[in-house]
Structures are given as structure tokens and as C-alpha cells.
Image (tube, rainbow, N blue to C red; front, side):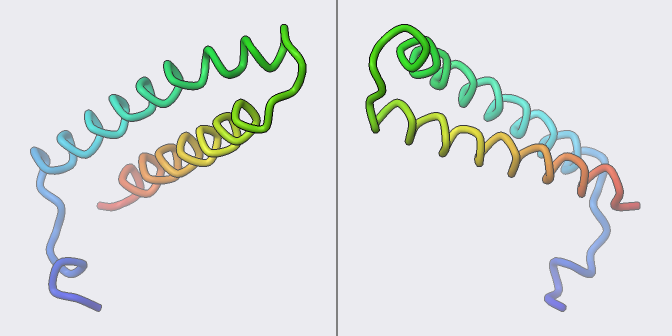
Length: 73
């Protein structure tokens, strides 16, 4: 384990990570909305499908990050 993993997470650091994670999720969703709209209303474009796939992966990553942070004592 690295030295950083052994250090306890402070309340301010934890709050900073949570705020950054939520802001990133909002940004990802806002970027995904036009692609989802075009995917539903227009013929399939690979760029829109790729944007939704990458966006879904980023949202899953940030949710896992929040869950992991919540479990850390």
C-alpha cells in the first residue's frame, strides 16, 4: 500500500471529492442529453452512440467513487 492509502481521509477532503464527483456527473449528463435526443429522434449515428456509451461509463465510475468514499471510515 502506498503512503496515501494509509492516511485517513479528512472531512474537508471527503467533502471536496463529493462535490467534484457530483459536478462531474451533472456535466456528463448535460453533455449526454443532446446525444440521447438525437439518438431517439434521428437515424443512428455512431458518434451519438459512442457519446452515450462513454457518458454512461463515466457516470458509473463516479457513482462507484461515491459509494467507495462513503464506505471509508
